[in-house]
Length: 98
Image (cartoon, rainbow, N blue to C red):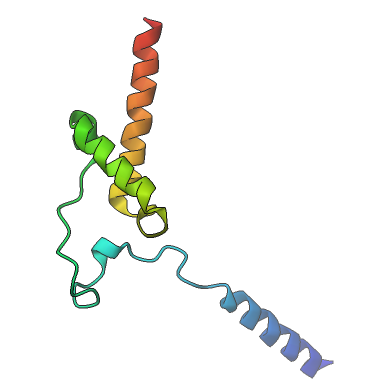
């Protein structure tokens, strides 16, 4: 019985650790430039407030994020662009109700 408990405990530990993977890999922009030598270095990260103030750049970034969601969807720039779009939409709705 003691060996059965040890085997079960070991099996559960292995199964539990098997789920530990990198669900949030570093975005392409954060990876070493040596890993992607043909890619230029990325520009500085755009904040949500900067994107709200620069609507043309916001639209361009949203288009780029939609065009390549597999690679860019979870990058900080696309996350900030989506948040900025959400805040702009809420503000426009509030303004329309005035």
